[in-house]
Length: 478
Image 1 (cartoon, rainbow, N blue to C red):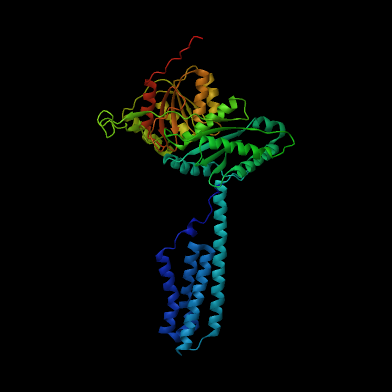
Image 2 (image 1 turned 90 degrees about the horizontal axis):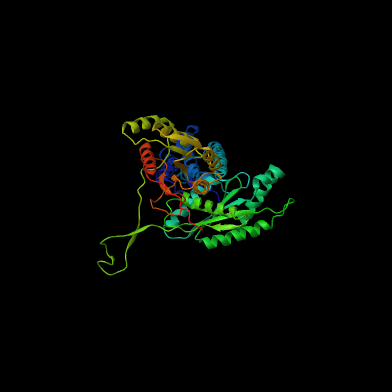
């Protein structure tokens, strides 16, 4: 399984030529001094020139840690020995063994001290980086680490490699926690993490996604292969014995599809499949259906059957994003808002439900939309959003982040339409990489934006959605 990043990035990079040149110059200074001023070099004042050999240990330790300190020590001792050999062999001056003794002791002590300090700093840096990328309870990679890995895997999917995501959730874990206590819950989480670790290949990554949810990103793996992986996890987890009985989990599988615009959509698709697994009774696995991608023929191009009789060349329909995305800087928000209103941005009426687990972004969007005349209700997560929707008299637009703890934007929209019928939705993605229409997303009228965006892009996207009619529900006679 992929491991958290270590703290050796700088130690593996090449030492700059400037640092190497300066080190060689510093080491050559005592040798040149022994030839140019031999009498002065054997005196105590000559130690001043010997001090230049301390430069290489400092420089090399910075770039190579303890190994650099050792190289600096070896280089300095070689320079000291060469200078004394020159003094004796050329009969320039008699060595001052007292000066040599104290110089050697000082030099060795300084090099050892520098090396120890560098090693302590390296270990602390590596530990801090590991803590930043590792869940402290389960020792699995955390969500931050997974975000880095899944972006790289998603890029591989764009290049044509099969990539799958598996989202797993322990069944009835909250009730289990309430019944047996948090200590027992932690034991279950750690046991599941250990089983997941054993089942994960080194080329893949499994992490704690949040709470009782775990995510596995499988490289070079189809949805069917991911389902086999879930079976391995179930087998490994079945080996764990608990005094309170069996613990099960549900899993959702999604494979990268050519219409997906970001890694957020891959995870959100897995979350939808997980929701279907829970609805099916839990302790099972569901695979997200691969949605169709809208295509158009390239008119008049080579391969057009109307002109050459060859097979048609097709392209994926592109929908340009209104702006770069969504994200408000509290310092710049007021100025941007004023400028946006002065620019004559479209205003309007209607009730908008804004859902984002990042409080500054959620509040910034809410303030901006209220200034444009909309009624705004804010929610920090999917469950709160569903509760708010049930109490609202009307809802004209759902504006939601794609990836949130507990419930993705796709799952939220699916549940909202299951309860209240067709709705408009504006999905926010933090990692949008392509701008392709993906028909697998829930929602009757859909737009996308990626973070961060300017207020103008948000205003136009909202107005465009509200101007588009929501299809009516047609009840087919039985």
